[in-house]
Length: 408
Image (cartoon, rainbow, N blue to C red):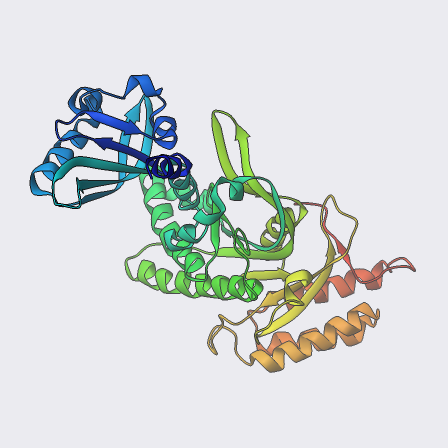
């Protein structure tokens, strides 16, 4: 039985230490020696008061209390220090009693959670803490390189330089803190992961590190919620005599690479790849197309929900050769902000089809009808200008209707 018990203790991943009635350390298994970074001769037969000193002295107080009260005590996420290395552990202190109720001493069980805590600490910077908890089973492997399908969301404030000039340093920081708080809440509500802040921009992802069946729809709902939340915030700002804030959002679904990237002195969990870059390009295109939310064809074709969306163009972004379909999301609009929406969108789509068939005059008529139904829809005027340009300078014979972007 003695050999069996010792074998069982040695195979445990938790550190186990036993003390006799006098407070002498009698045993310590291999896991305990590993956690405390010591050898057996450094601990066996030592008085517990002489062993747990300095920042670990609080443990002696708990051991003494358990010895006196004969009641177990548990301390979660405790911090210990051994050889100048901090260890996070769940500590259980149990009274040892013989079959005939005789006091035998105390047992200390240490569950090393340092690795899990590092993972949670890292991931909680990017996502809701509850979601980070789900990742702990994967340990630090989740932070390694991983290629996966995800939907990237990239929002950015419009005319930010003008805002900073008006607000000054303190005012700019205050505005960004308030703005980021609102936007991140919308992202995390849909289970998205915040990757980073880039100046006044945000980079977020859906489908990483945990995938869902509807990540594209989650990203869409988050984007729409962000515009609605921004509009609500702007009404409050205007009522206070402040300038409203405008922003554009780009969404793209693609295979991206994620992982802890950096140097030994500074590591950050981040996302890289062409799919990330395209989301950023779409955000920039919002200015050209006078839109608030633009999504790629990759995202559009994966959506499961029903949204008010119109195709606005096929483009070749700077640095690429492939044509990308671009769609505008209109769900955040009200009857006041976009009157006659569906009728206007139908005329616009007719105009777009005629435009691609090089029927310039008929396309101008359709875009004109759409513009009359909503005079604030500036993309109609943009296409009318394009039609007039192509009438004067006909495109090449192999023209496929795509517009080549010469800037990011």
